[in-house]
Amino acid sequence: MRTIMNTFESAPLWRRLAALLYDALVLVAIWMGAAALVLLAFRGEVDVAHQPPLYHFVLQGVLLVLTALYFIVSWTRGGQTIGMRAWRVSILDAKGHFPDTRRSLARFLLATGSALLLGVGFVWCLFDPDRRALHDILARTRMVHLHKPDA
Image (cartoon, rainbow, N blue to C red; front, side):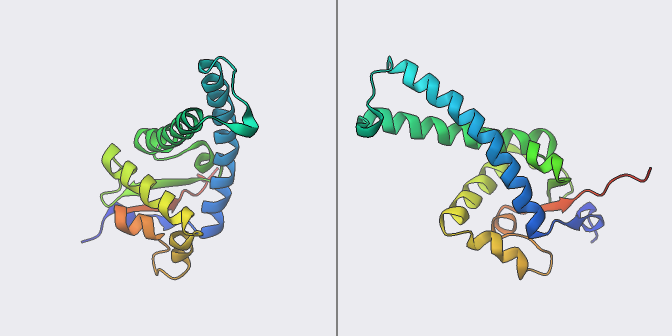
């Protein structure tokens, strides 16, 4: 049975990484704002060289949650992050729709695990006939290249 996903070309690894680089710039801005707010919550009484465990735990937790929200909300609301828009790629599920929250969360967690394992899951798309990363296969999603519309 042919699905709408078959009508799109899978995004190559270089395009995925370029979009991720753009997203990293957006995330750095978000992280800086969040770190300032967490520091403010601790009344600025934190020695950065000798962080208290509670401060460190709260800061890391806030950064992880904001990062997850950035990706999950972007994927569920339009299939794209800011970096993905710039590089004309999108995330679709098996039916050709934007992934729901559960599938986006699964994809985020799997992609994060892959990144922590030196990007093994990302490199998988070099060997997969459909150019899917390991986290896409497991989450049943696909990153597709959106070509420019004809002028």
